Length: 391
Image (cartoon, rainbow, N blue to C red; front, side, top):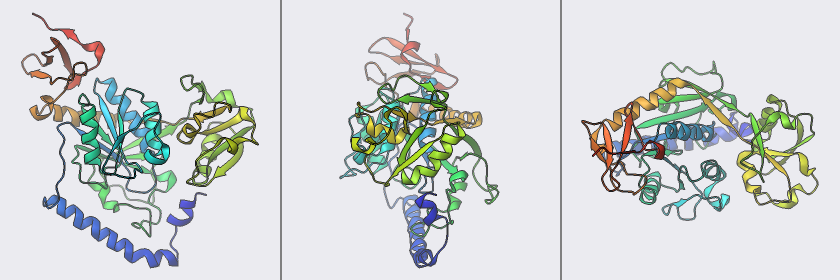
């Protein structure tokens, strides 16, 4: 059982003592929302679409695999997304780009994972304020034309065009149903009525009435491949590790989930768990059989420099309802149909502003004398789809 399950998923005398603080926190959220609605506090509206992928709970609920799926889906259509995430920076108002050399202690394991899975294809930036971070990302990557924010539901500073709330009933995301600090919720359950989509990881729970929620879509997290940290580009089916005695290494709060995940795909191993804030060092693996160590990908990337040890990483992929994809694309079509958005697009080659020709339904790069197509209402800015403009 996770430590979070011991605390968040029950009500004890301690929770009763903390309940007044939860009420104050809820009041704070209401007042803050009202202040932004009345424009007492400034918010930032970008000139490109913003998609928020977040959870109302302290549990991750699978938003990182969903964000990876979203990037792949958008890139397949020719868009150029960028990701804004929350980091542990000393100065949260000075965002920074995440690279393979970034310190996980500063930017977070999830941000490192996103950057490693999306090398050179999608910029990943972290910071304490999503609006400031998104603007910094755009300043360095002006050709980015969609922002994906993985911590936006609780941060109204950045205006958004599509909100996705991720719910994981298998992880009991809502716990005892109380707001922080007595419970795991960062927002009231009614917040799920006001988003554009609720993505349910796994099967729906009968303990909650979802009729009043925003349209719900289903997601399944799967692990079908593994890879060695020394050979991240070579994926193997998980069956390659079957019938081997594995050492499953993870942090304590992920231990229950990780063992279940291994059993689900037919793998079995001895568990070795570490504290929640543990940073892995080579000596952690001294007593283990180096040929059979397996870790969650998010944690394994901390060990990328342990070249003398063979560590297998278990990545997680998201299978998502096609209806969610259609809903997101319909929203983007509406945004790009607005001249405010379509006329702000940047050429990925020369970084100059593109010119939209409504009659031709094409985007012109006057500097390079090239054009980009618009397919089914979505600008396709992939390199392979550039064409010489007819004289």
